[in-house]
Each structure stands twice: as structure tokens, then as C-alpha cells.
Amino acid sequence: MSWALHPLTEEQTEVQKLAREFAKAEIVPYAAEWDEKAYFEPTLVKKLGELGFLGMMLPEQYDGLGADTGTYLIALEEIAAADASVAVLMSVHNSLPTQMILRYGSEAQKKRFLKPMARGEILGAFALSEPDAGSDASALTTQAVKDGDHWVLNGTKAWVTNGNTAGMIMAMARTDTSGARKGGRGIGAFIVTPDLPGFKVGKKEDKLGLRASPTVQLNFDNMRVPAENLLGDETQGFIYAMQSLDNGRLGIAAQAIGIARAALEHSVAYAAERKQFGKAIKEFEAIQFKLADMAMRVAASRALLHAAAAAKDRGQSVRQFSSMAKLMASETAMWVTTQAVQIFGGYGYVKDYPVERLFRDAKVTEIYEGTSEIQRIVIARALYGQS
Image (cartoon, rainbow, N blue to C red; front, side, top):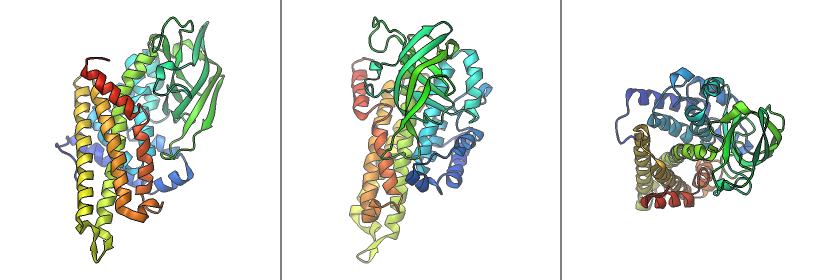
């Protein structure tokens, strides 16, 4: 079904078609099995990289596509409609570590990491949260102490997407161990690679949804990180992370919209086929009203998302609007998938049909990269000119 409220550019149309064909051939036939087995398919990284989907917003000089934000989000929605687990891989990689290196990294860091990341030779991850520092991420306790030409990191990171498969992890650690700088001040961002002494992969989470996307703890035990792996200013890493999350939330919104759109499309098809009381259930107003509300919320969420993306590409601050887009899209995904399960009835509650998986995948979009409650705080503070 057509969903664009505005005409796509020629480039966007080509990217959308490429993403849709890739998803249909390489993801859709396997998504249910990957979910059931909680299996991460490693060949997807190279395939996504070969198509340019892991360097979409990187300049061509770093082997990226140089695409604008809207084009990236169009591709991401297509992948999410096929499997949200693959979409979160693509979203985290594109929105967080690559963009942090592009914006704040040295030229040596850019040359070392960005090209192989764009080509899918290195998968990126992002490690900010800790077991006791989630929504209050600035309370992180992982320590970084300078020792000659290295930094020594100690601590545990939690909820790290791709943490056991990534070739580089952007990890935040407290460089000011004196306590003089409070909150987010005095935190550095470090490019961590799994070959470093003291790097250990911890517990893999057994999740409700996104089961084909590995989420792990990372343990840093006197991990020695070369000084050249520090990103920018040693006290500004938390600021870098927050600025990147403003943009990363646009990716989560696109993921949520993809989930919701898939649930809507499955519901429309099922309602036309399923018969009760002698006619297709699409003929009943109760079902029509659900479908109409589902379609309206998906379209509204997408419109807000792409308005925020356009503002970002104009150089505007999008903190408030990325939070709005993420909040609206994630709550839309949860609401739409709930309605989809209801339309499918008993069949919606079993794994033979796809809406059960979509329902489970939708929930986390209200939680990660900032809970719905945190998004409301960000939006409300912006109304009063507060950061």
C-alpha cells in the first residue's frame, strides 16, 4: 500500500525499492525462525554494508552514501517492516558510533573506522547504560584512569545491542574520578575493540522481543585502551552521546513505524480473508474502525518523523522533535500491534501468525534510547526553554 504523504525523490524511490527487495529476499523468509531461536545471522552485516545501508549518512569520502536523514529513515522503515531485530542493528550502527566518530573523531579515527563500518566489515555498538544507570545515564560508574599512553577502564555496561558481534563499541566512562565534576561532566567516550586486554562479554539477555538482535553486558576488567581511541575531549563524552541520541531516536521512531506498518498491512489482508457470520470481517464496522485508526496513527507518526528529519537536515536542533517523533511512533507501534492481535483473535496469540512477533517487538521501542517518560520530560523542558 502507498504510504508517502509527499512525493519521494528519485534517489529515495530507488533506496526504498532496494531496501524492500532486500528485505523480501533476505529477511522475511527467515525472520520468524531467527526470532524463535534467538539467532543472529552474521552474514546480514556484510550484505547490508554492500548495499550501502550501514553508511547511509556518511560522506562518500568514507565510502558512505551521503544520504540525507529522510532517505536513511525510509530505508530503515522498510527493514523494520520485515524484522525489527535487523532494523535495530542498522539503526544503532548508523545513528550512534558512526555519527559520533564523524562529528567528533580525529582524522586518524575516521580513516581507521568509518570506511570499514560503511562497508559492513566492522559492526558498531554503543555502550552507555549500566546495571544501575539507565534513564539516569549520567550516574554511570565505569571508571577510566589515564596510565601513560593508555586509559584503563573498569566497569560493567548493560543492554549493549550487538555487543558480542561488534568490531567496535563506543563506550562511555568517567574520566574525572575525583568527583569534582558532577553528573554528565567528566565522562569520556572511548572507541573499544574486542581484542583489547580486559574486554569480556558478559550475560546475554533472554528478551521478550527483538530476539534475533543480541543484547549483552560488557565487562571491562582493567581494560587497556590506547589513548588515541579517546574521542574528542576527555570530559565531553556524555555530551557527545546525548547529542547523538537526539538523532538516534529518529531511527527508533522509524523502526517503530515499520513495526506498526507491518501490523497494519497484515491486519488489512487478514480482515479481507477471514470470514465470520457469513462475510469477511472487513465488512464489520468494529474492524473498519480499528483499521482506520491504525492507518491514521501510522501516517501521523511518519509525518512527524519526516518533519523532524527535514529540520535536522536544515541544521536545526531536533532534541524536542526527535523526542516527539520517538514517543509518538513507539506508542503508535504498541497500540497498533495490540489492535492487530485483537483483529486476528486467537490466531493473533500464536506464533503461526506474524502479529504476535510484531507485538513483542513493539514494546521495547517505548523503552530503549530513552523511555516514554524521559521523552515527555525532554519535551516539557523544551517548552520552557530548558535543555
